[in-house]
Length: 405
Image (cartoon, rainbow, N blue to C red):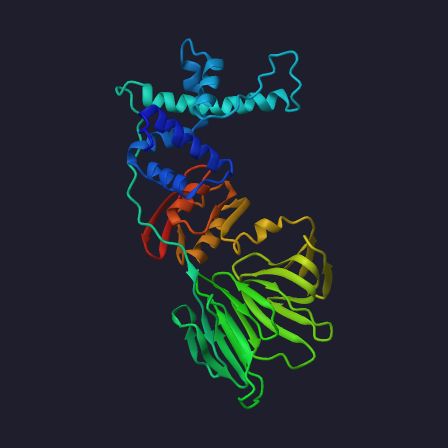
């Protein structure tokens, strides 16, 4: 049985988890639960605010008398079971890391050590004035949810349908597989009718996987849709999407696979690619992960290579190279991933996954967000995990969050 930590050790441990999270390092599920419980405890609000106020910490540090900074650095690194940073004092030091970088690392941990010292060791006569935290409602993450609209307008809620044949569309059987996917299978004993179109759509808070009649695979992000024929019989395979969809295409040289997404037309050339075509995003973005694809918009076209991205906006088409594929596909792999994202960008993604409406009271807080965090966490856990500085918000109901300056 693990020995219970004393208050100093507990504060050190939790602050170390918070620092790791803010540096973009991954935490285990148990560590996330521990950190979430600690951060939502009103008794820790002062320390959390203090950690966000670096200037005040520096001033407090300067005011400490007889403070041995070298000993503090050694002590905090020992507490966190981390290797000591090089100080550059040894003339034989051959570390390739610049001295200023090593000093910065030590300074960061000194700040953390000072915060812990102030909150745990200082007399209770001089408490830090903080506003007590209000216990927040929370919202659970999304999951596999989708609706299939048949050619006659009938709607099937897929997440509540049992595995097996769920419909017939002409000579095609629509089947829900044991893993939850939807697939289309020819059925010889049914009459051959004209091709009809189906639409599979995910609500906010839903994702789904589909195998198209030609064997191509499609993964739908939240609040997305894909419209396609139940059989590809012509000289091309044309489908339409909204929202975000990732494709792995079954290549047919004599029957090109084409996707209409907003103002973009994407043509497969033995390809896997992601299309982000949400109407509330500033551009339609296609990112190629394998093979080749031609992207056309506004009278222009580009042939993409793996790792390239095409963006169309206001009739223009631009190309970006060396795109972070892991970040683009984070949603498909169960994570949110942000690089210098502002708050509205973050909240648009969260609103789709947690099925919430976002309301800003007053000015929109500035600052950017970096890091990756799992989509299996609750909304509170994600917001706390992503914040470089604390976000002031209130969850008013199961479908509304208010952001305040």
